[in-house]
Image 1 (tube, rainbow, N blue to C red):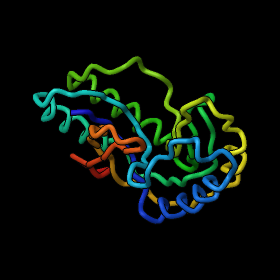
Image 2 (cartoon, rainbow, N blue to C red):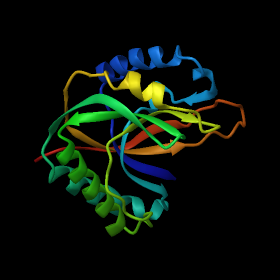
Image 3 (tube, one colour):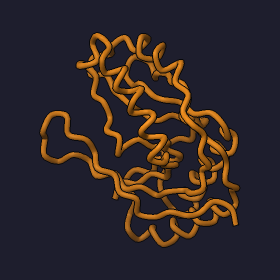
Image 4 (cartoon, one colour):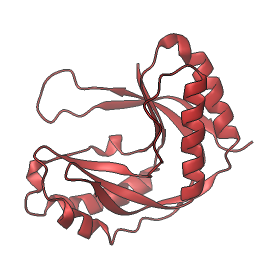
Amino acid sequence: MRLFAAVLPPAQAVDELALAVDRLRALPGADTLRWTGRDGWHFTLAFMGEVDDGLLPELHERLGRAAHRTAPFPLRIHGGGRFGRRALWAGAAGGLEEMRLLAERADAAARRAGVSMEEHRRYQAHLTIARSRDEADLRPYVEVLGTFEGASWEVGELALVRSNLPVSGVRGEQPRYETVGSWALGR
């Protein structure tokens, strides 16, 4: 199954971001972007890709340890940016150092459980809200996102999420996400 470790924002944070995204979708050219659905908004900590079912018990145990070693921390959705001309994202503020540490621990947990991980990169907290099919100019969207300031919440859980990719071939179909494990942060 296709898995990743994540921080899932609470409903209030998703609702706030949805209002900002509605404003972005009203900008000229927004119809050329592929907008991600609210139910898919998350902060990926460690992308694992396809994971063999036989590794799941060890992965669950190690992710649990990673979560318990990390204290809860404050976070809010804040501002935004882009990865080149291909992806538009909302950023985060608050306990970014704690979130980076949790991402590193989740990555290490997966590696130690035997999951073949991609090359390790420095963690950048982001929540993808749109992708460009044709390398659109995302700067106007980033400018509007720059003023976004969500309410703070306390991250208290590490989630293991399964990504079910679209199979119907219908244009615009979104992946479906399901939480297959979660662990409280701290002891």
